Length: 142
Length: 281
Image (cartoon, rainbow over all chains, first blue to last red; front, side, top):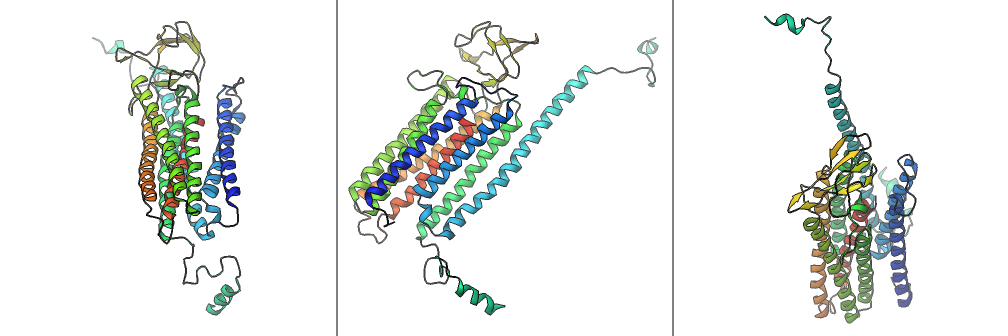
């Protein structure tokens, strides 16, 4: 803590403010671009562009998180053991995200499947009397 | 085998050599600070659970309200300004984090008045954020009538034309595309979903959006707001302690200010991800 002068430490803090502010503005810009507010709207056939937008946003947010934890919370000057015991468990969340998004996706596909099956039974209801044990309705009437 | 491992440890001359040899704190921090870090880790998992639940439910829904449509109003009559207000809220928290860092720095120099000054600014930032969030909630609940179980924000899955207007932004004959969001307005306390005709010629009526959206929004932003509120309360208590000179004589000096600073930065950090998940993605 004593290796930087007071004035330099203050300058670093304000540089950090500018950095976080600029990154936030870039994130908002990217998000609005992805939703079509900045002139050009990526259509549904440009999934790859939307994927880049999403990944870009996630990477920028993780960078902001790294900066806040390492610089503002002074994690960079903490003992390595402390750093590891706090940050390593967060890696478990990567698996949680993969598992749950896969779950959400499978729910979506089930909903879609149920909807399709519902529509099918309404539209395709045609019973072929020939070949079945049922006789035509008229034969049952007296 | 035992002698081999002992010899290996003595040969290990890294920067933390001897951290676990006893007689000192292995992580070189006080108990209070260490426990604050572990509390923040557990809280991070709680919020991660909520945000992952949001992602799961969003992926499982056929449609989802588009955030830049839902959050496009500002106080004093702002309309059609997507994400501007919530970006302003983000800046409030970032600035309050910066003032907190300055407060901790002044604490290291044992500058009592400086600490009080910068903590006061941090508190103002926190209260400002809470006020903005309160306005957002009031807007959603009382103006747009979204609740934990009712979500009047929907998204079209096919393109078409409206057959009637809603006296707000939509007029009869307005066209819309698949993916456009809409808000079902209320007239005289009753929801008035508009009728429209799809391009395929079928007449339909506006449907409510996924219920989960309202529940998730209020629950997650509410939980975060609760953390901001408790953070502000603690900041006030510790600022008063600082002003009274309580930390001047303490062996660990202004470490309490550092600890509450960690909590405050955590609150900012969570907001970075809530902002990302709810508003940007």
